Image 1 (cartoon, one colour):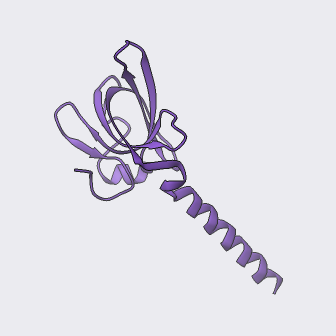
Image 2: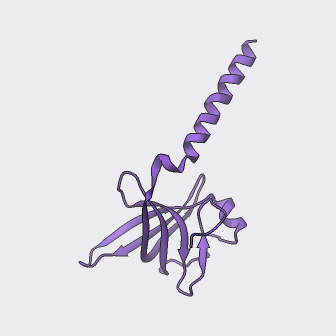
Length: 129
């Protein structure tokens, strides 16, 4: 009986943690779409999410450094996207959604390359229009 209780508690806690981690709406705001062009400065293929770091030049000449969250390395790899798919220094267009706290962090949906190809980098299955 004690084993069942411990196992049940572990399942509840584990599933709550997993649900919280995967809840897009906990961190990002679907009402704050982002779309910007910038230069890729760093790519991180780490679990649980990959990150694309992009420097965006502002009209006044200053630079904003954005962190764009993407799907897991495994999800991206299955789509043919590797850490070296986009060379550092490439100018890309980012489409996605901004963090709720207003920071320079977003959940990436698509990355558009200079030749017009769109890479779906979110966990969703279909690219945005």
